[in-house]
Image 1 (cartoon, rainbow, N blue to C red):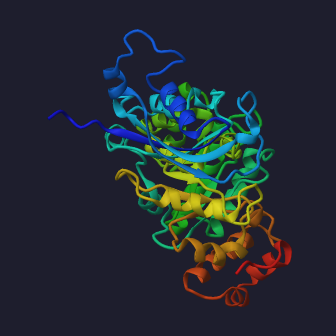
Image 2: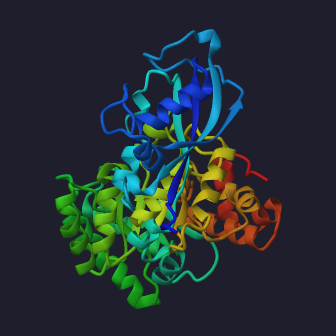
Image 3: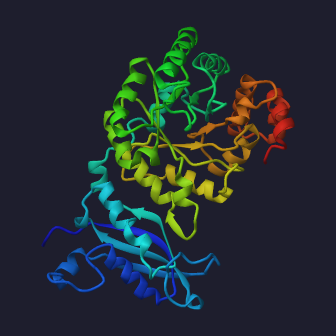
Length: 420
């Protein structure tokens, strides 16, 4: 018997005004062996071995959203379905860029489809044999920040742009003294002339080292090293040479191949920021859903990955956010676990509701305004976050947490009632 053919299963939501099976077969053909007409050498044998196949097609209700521009057929006949396509691994091999060409390439332009969104991927073990995934994950991150248990509490430098390196150093010293686990550059703070990467490293690392000398604990600082791929190694090396323990890369800006390139070189965890993902994910009609996207990001080496948090300031519902957190925590081909990063509008009053939903402390909770906007300053903001999460983890009520923590009560005066 021959070697069994391995496959990738790609799951889509599609809409079409044509018969569903016909539209599904057009998509399968376009993204594997087919073109708009049968060509020479496109034998039945070639099609049998290399053509994508319809695994399943399940009709679901329409949402009422408009059809994509240029789609054909009678709008009154439009239908919606969950489509699972089976792609032979032989078509692209265990290569993430070439996989994406098949499962998320020209298919978005097919006029037979009124909507098409990739929502999940089932990948064979060959991908884990080529891609090592995170080097540090949950365990390595906890070890480096000396936080063996409990939620990891972090913040984003605010204002995101405008602080001088000296001011940044002062803020980091205040946050470290308050007991924060993690601090990160904002995704908008790259290597600009006002506060270039070298100057930020020179301002931050001596402060963190002095704190570590006094306490034995050094908070993790994620320096944003996002840049052209040819600059990633040098930016990483600059941070590591100064004693830094984390770098941040904006996944969609350096690309999955850039992230994997950085992962192969990196000696510290990679904090994966999802900026620009809304442009890929937000529409119900078009793009790539978070479940599919995060699998590629994790295989490419993201040790931390942003999921947003409940009651966030952006468009996602709590249900969508919780599904994203669950997706990042699900095992993937045996690779090291990635840390879900909860962010966007987070503050201490969300701790109990979040913990009740996720039932884990293996999360990195980032509060920007929720810490820096605290009425009594950033240190009190950190204290309010720590008290709220510790209370939730002990199984206490929100009222008990408020009663025990003046900092949390003060936060609630500004941000409103805590969620239960």
